[in-house]
Length: 139
Ligand SMILES: [Zn+2]
Image (cartoon, rainbow, N blue to C red; front, side, top):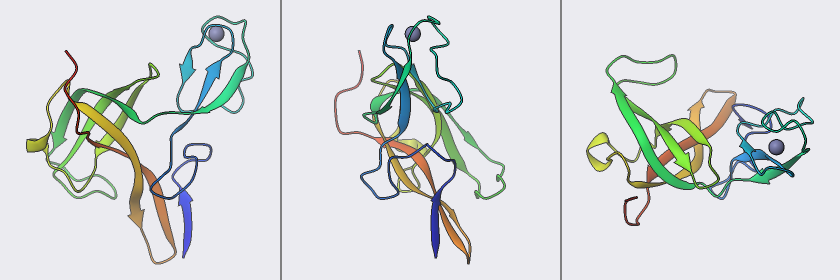
């Protein structure tokens, strides 16, 4: 079965140790996610060039909502949220399927992990999810 990431240049690998790939400006430090492989200059300071980095996957849950309507490949209900990663980028993603809305709260520590988004007879497609991280909540 073919395996791939839902988008190129998104994940460092497809396994459980995968990290999100981002760009970081070598002048001002701004981090951009997802990467824009066509950009060769920082869009914040317009001075620096961009270097590829791997995000830690650690951060805090900014906000979330649960949908009662199914999506194209996702059965309802499912929960999505904005997570603020330690590197200063806000990422939108789904709550991992092993967790439920009752386990999460705004401001809690989370980790972002790669896992299967959907699977067909021909391919397995990987994306990223957030899940509770066992640490104290952000003050
Ligand atoms: Zn910059």
